[in-house]
Image (cartoon, rainbow, N blue to C red; front, side, top):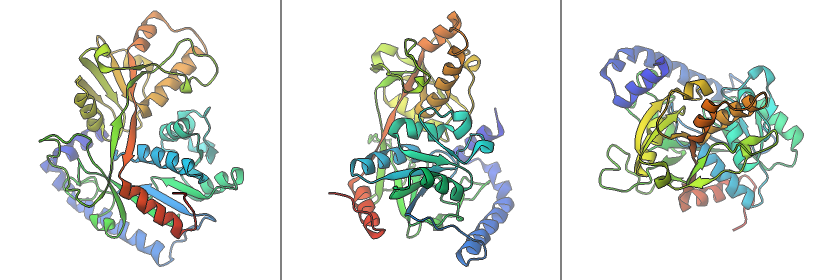
Length: 371
């Protein structure tokens, strides 16, 4: 088990030993405050893009549903005729090849898994680079008619000025012990939420025990993730270089049986396991660190039952299969593995108030949204 997985588990359990790290959290908090103030008063320079920037991020470590939210917003804006682009740090990619545009043929090993997923799902114009100014410049050089740029996970990147901020909070996890890293999982103090647009990611289920430990959400901006039908990961008959967008077969839960291996390399894997459980599966969970680089050989250990993965992990595993089959045919062992690999897609469903707020914010920065 990795250090990241161990610490993540301790945050989820609110382990008492974490309080031994409190002095480090105080130092981290002081540095964070001084850094933000330095940008605020101009001691550190920041970049103003020539078009409006909307930053979507969170104050906590781990998955909050940010990527599905961005995909839903891009779909909405594209439907409204807004020319939108995305920039991202490109975490997990090869920084030596950045800044880089993300296309349907991009490799997760070069640009990162989340950028590949976003572009595969939406076809949006996107660029990646740890230096967000370079990402913006690269994007606008190729797509000069963009009206809005969404910065993925750039909340703490104060070197980039922003016009709109949305902070995503996982309501089920809440804020843990409400402490900064490493005692807790907060990147910034909870005071950062004051006056901000906060989107609370709530659980879809509304049973008697579903909201145990969750935040009260009355009069809040909310979203939830709606699971779609399971999709087979790989279609052997697909042709062409880009099999990551191959047509997939949808399947209902009963055809897979009751037990499944749930393999996840996302920020908060328990949400994925819980979603599968709510669909009626008996879940054998296998949690890996966020952005984990799986290997096909590694997946061979999960036998006897179907293997279900997230859309983000599917991007990387499909790329592995593309690379493998470009050199040789699948062995019988890998054919059997592939036959058991399934993806659970999810769609972010935003409350009407989210779209109302977005409409008024875009109007404020001079972007007209029909309807």
